[in-house]
Image (cartoon, rainbow, N blue to C red; front, side, top):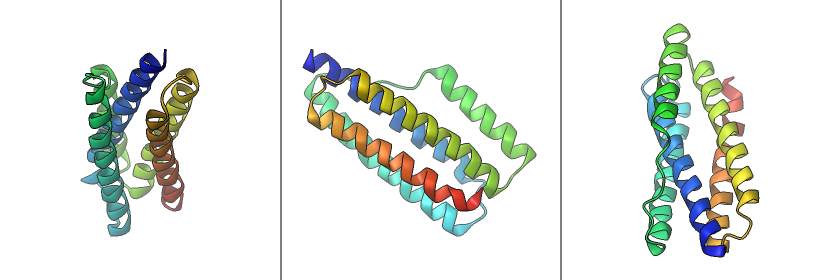
Length: 144
């Protein structure tokens, strides 16, 4: 049970971190504020570092991780493009990113509870990703 929960939690973290990276990439070209661009770029680097750590943990279990569903990725990108076409502003970017962060925190918290038998390393990874998403959402409030 521990190994199954561990792998499942790591997969969900992998999916979440990939979605976070993709979402940041989708908006970076539209950012107006140097400070916001810097914050998003730093957050993307933190996501990428977590992704590398996740891959190492997943390799220990001979697992390749989990990609976000193609439809979710396409819909997210389309929604971002549509909203930014109508309101190309840092406020709109902050709004989109805050929604994404909140969804990530909610999903990861659910999986952390659902896969309670997971090992401490994978739980720690999920908690780190939750904190990263929560902190970004708080930092974006000044742009809403």
